[in-house]
Image 1: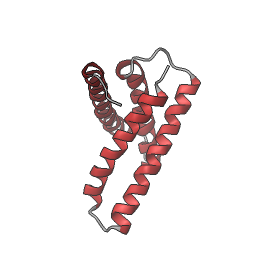
Image 2 (image 1 turned 180 degrees about the vertical axis):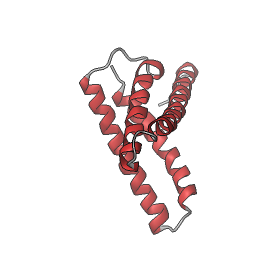
Image 3 (image 1 turned 45 degrees about the horizontal axis):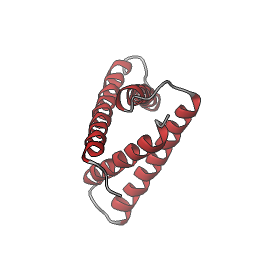
Image 4 (image 1 turned 90 degrees about the vertical axis):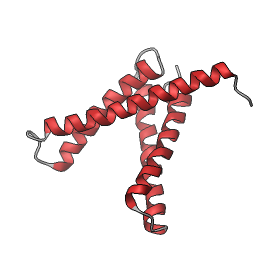
Length: 132
């Protein structure tokens, strides 16, 4: 199946916005980490709180800015959570294969894996999570 030049350009714009929001989410995560550190002593609770704040930011911006979807409902939230479960599973599985089985560098493996997970996340978001 071929895609028209117009559709391809539109899809690339969507992918670009998806990436920008993703990078912004990383920024929000680190800002939350810094701001919450004085009030949350536990590393586990600190990182969990920062992750949740970042995920809410990401969900809202991906919904309204990237995919220009209409509204938010429970079904969409549950799809988003499910997508993250899939992506976390892929991330952990690939890291196990690259680092533990293939004995590759941890950080290089995570960079490659992050790229793969980003593509999977985009495809699931585009075709399932934010489809109105």
